[in-house]
Image (cartoon, rainbow, N blue to C red; front, side):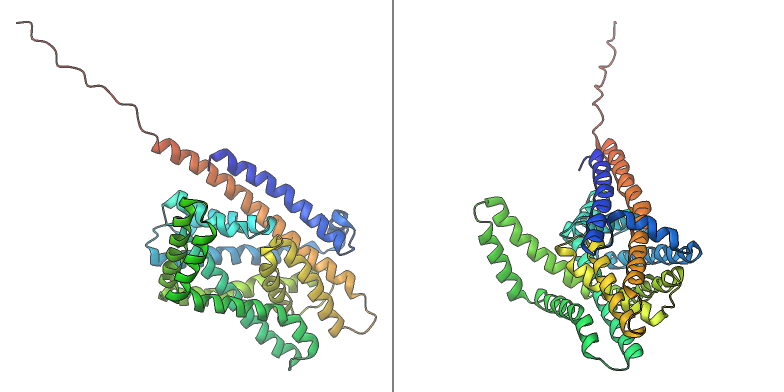
Length: 359
């Protein structure tokens, strides 16, 4: 990918994130993009500072965790070098459907460090699995602490996360089975039969990805990465407590992590069909509305409060990922240009013939 395309991606992403947010606000009958001005005007900015701080610390933890997951592949990069690729990929996932950032990140890793694409992709897949596992654990613990028991309303709230978690677990069980991997390789090879190149490369890709996943899952680094995932998501979910205070609503720590965990779990799952940022916003608005409706007296104006908190959380992601993601994409473009200049062969210097002896 040429360096100028990184700048094009950054520019398009900024436009898309504004467009998707406008559509989501209209779909929820919240008045479109103008609702942002109203929300910012009534929020207490003092409580936004710790929310931004928690967001930034969580992404530092993400870079360290990705570095741990890449260690089995003898990747020599450090978390600081991996940070732009990671944040740039997450930024794309938030603004583009089909989880485009999860494909872009291992591609950039291959360009910058020479790491196999399947190795980078397996580390991203495993990171998503650890995310789902951590969020599922947070949801279960917070449900018990908040409700004491699992009621019908709570079951409806956590049904999608449970189903997505089951799908992820089944996938990891199957990908470790040689017969299943060989079967999928043959099926995909037949699907791409018209192209002789893809007919050979796709099955090889599936088998290499399975091998790299087994390498990563079988490493002790995966255990350390999971232990890091729990505080990572606690930091990222507890910021709803501060956002509630920004609008004069007392949301406890446990309620905060419960709402955010369901929102991120369901939102990232639907990120296959929708931009993850929009899916998370919709999930968070609906979950907050349901939770506040259960906790507050009947007739309380919970809809407006839920919309304001969910929108502010979305704005933190938009602002934070824009500040971190766009420069990261541009930085990778500049680094790629330098790399290309270094790799360009220097012109050959013709050796001068020895001076003739006049004697």
